[in-house]
Length: 110
Length: 114
Image (cartoon, rainbow over all chains, first blue to last red; front, side, top):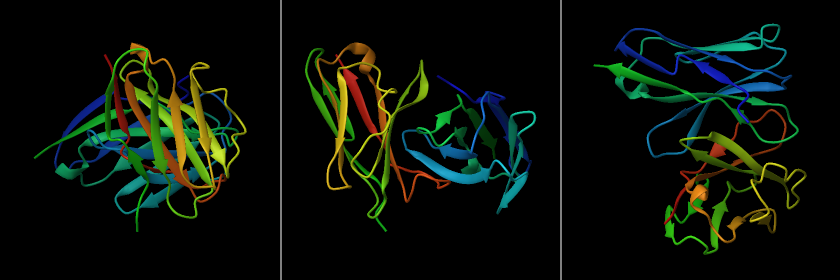
């Protein structure tokens, strides 16, 4: 079953703008991860944030986690055409595999 | 270094046939995972291995699905008596341990049941 729900389902912005995607989940987690998927390919890990962390940065990526609201956000700054992809949040409760949301399809217009 | 390798990349078979999907994880990764991705269901967790053992098989959709891992390395996912609803992309991932580690995914096997 799906635990995470990404919002929005689709997002189209101009190159250079920032893109923000949100994720909500339902149960307790050990960590939350964000992945990117290009069409026809596997998922690429972007960032992992543990349940006791509130914010994490990696290059142009910024992830926040609010365990009281069971939500997370992914911010991509200064977007590029190559950022066009689907983005998934995934929760890890350590009892099984990851539980993925349905994803946000991001399109960067050149 | 080499990533997670899955074979075949595409498989087309007739309903009722058995299929075997293979995953070769990153060398040294003790944890291995199988997921299924389909339009209707999104990304679903199927099973994971810690070493050669699978602590939780409850994610497997039916008893037609089975998986094994030998030598702490290669894993095979077998689907018996395939049905059209089994059509999906089957993704394999591995991680260096089970705790707080990113998972590295292969490109998947696209399975089509005619």
